[in-house]
Image (cartoon, rainbow, N blue to C red; front, top):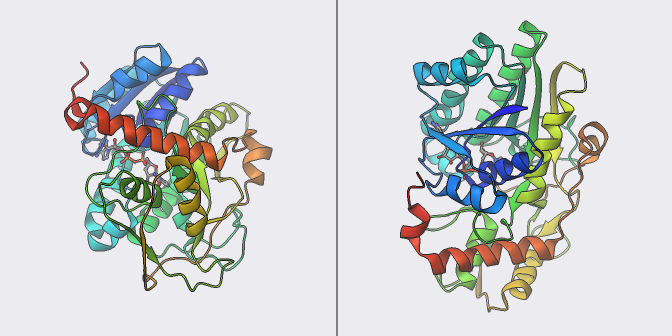
Length: 345
Ligand SMILES: NC(=O)c1ccc[n+]([C@@H]2O[C@H](COP(=O)([O-])OP(=O)(O)OC[C@H]3O[C@@H](n4cnc5c(N)ncnc54)[C@H](O)[C@@H]3O)[C@@H](O)[C@H]2O)c1
């Protein structure tokens, strides 16, 4: 297929482009480089052996998006562009509605106008909020507790409504659980400036000595070891999930579907700390703090629908996730910031 990938210079987008190219699809990326790296196209080409173009465009520009789709002749769109930090969304909800919903509306309008009938959308397990029953299935109540989660649910709703008004449209919303890890080459991974919001980048910055200690928020939850539990999944598995979803959109079914991408196994923060100590062979000093408001005690996926409907299953082990994340952290530090910011073309 001829595929447009939005947010292609970002963490999940860059890995997704690599998997799409490996599967024989033709890819055009688009990104405004607000968070994505300009070196992404060069790095994707280096690991895939194929040239790729990432068009610089702010997707909130209706004329710009329209012009891109008018000439692109795309069969499908994989829409990843947006912002993803839960805490930041609580501090600045306007930014999240602007960046997430604001990028989606011109894109879906142009898709309608230019006859693109297949869309894969990056959703998130945050649409479930703090679930009462585990594992979380796609039928679990949708009850986001943050502006970020609300934007994901709002976009899902828009896509679901669009599938009613445009019966030829076929959409899969992938609800990712917690993507971690990196490309084993050390060339692609998650760049985080300052203090990270997500667990693995935070632990890795402590392991590398960039931050003095890891703050564990709450060790008195009603879980096996008292710390919170999440479902961590290798970013390469998540990337493969996009290819699987895209190819499933050819199965003749029409309409909106949501699919969880998780391993189905919950891992506690203390378990992740131990796995990272083993992977990095570094001391990771830890301080225990009181619980944070809004943190769900435990969440992990039921990944059965992904297996049944798109033939996807997470394959990478926890050890691989931590080792690859660490390898990227060390490689990026060695290369230095300037090299990773470099303009590729
Ligand atoms: N990483 C996670 O933990 C996670 C979990 C669940 C869902 N998601 C979703 O997956 C998607 C990708 O996440 P990621 O981790 O790769 O994040 P990322 O920040 O690395 O990538 C997002 C990309 O979108 C680009 N972008 C932002 N606004 C844009 C705009 N107006 N026009 C064009 N490009 C724009 C950024 O420059 C960046 O390259 C996001 O939609 C995110 O909400 C991520």
